[in-house]
Amino acid sequence: MGFLSDIANVFGSIAKGNAAKDAAQQQVNGYNQGIDTLNNESDRINGLLSPYITSGTNATNAEGALLGLGGNNAQTAAINNLQASPLFQSLMRNGQEAILQNGSATGGLRGGNIQSSLANFGSDTLAKVIQQQLANLGGLSGQGLSAVGSSGQFGANAAGSIAALDQAAGRARAAGILDKAQADQGLYASGGDILSQILSAIPGGNGSFGNKFGSTLSNLASSFI
Image (tube, rainbow, N blue to C red; front, top):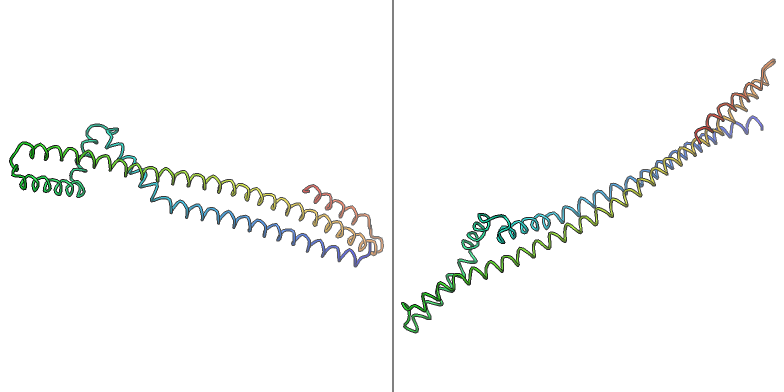
C-alpha cells in the first residue's frame, strides 16, 4: 500500500469515525426529543383530565356521606346542607305557597288536610332532592372514574412508547460506538503502515516496528468491537 494511499486512509478513517459518532448522536437526539414530546403530552392530558378526576373524587365522597357510609354525623350534615340549599328552599317555598293558596281558595286554610299536606310536602320534597342529588353525584363520580381510566390508558401507552424510544436510543449509541471502533481500527492500521514506511526509509531503520505498532493499535481497537 502506497504512502499517499495510507495517508488518505488515515483521513478517511478519521472522517468515518466522526461521521459515525455524529450520526449516532443525531439518532439519540431524535429519540430523546420523542421522549420529551410524549412526557409533555402526558402532562397536558393529565392537566385536562385533572378537574374531572378531582370533581369525581369529591362527588364520590359526598355520595358516600349522603348514603351514610361516613357515619351518622356525616349523613346528618349532608342532609342538613341539602335542606339549607337554595334549590330545596325554593322548592319548599313555592310548594307551600301553592298549598296555602289552594286551601284559601277552598276555604280550608286551617283544616287538618292543609296541615297534613304541608308536612307531607316537606318530607316528599326532601326525599326527591336527596334522590336527585345522588343521581347528580353519581354522574360526576362516573365522569371522574372515566377520566382516571383515560389517564391511566394514555400513561400506559406513553410508557410503552418511551421504553421503545429509550431502547432505540441505546441501540443507536451502541452502533455509534462500534462504527467508531471500526474506523479507529482502520486508522491505526494505516498509521502503522505509514510509520513502517517512514522507518524503512531511514538508513538502519526497522520497518517491522511500525507494522507491529500499527497491528497492536488495530488489535486494541478490535477489542471494542
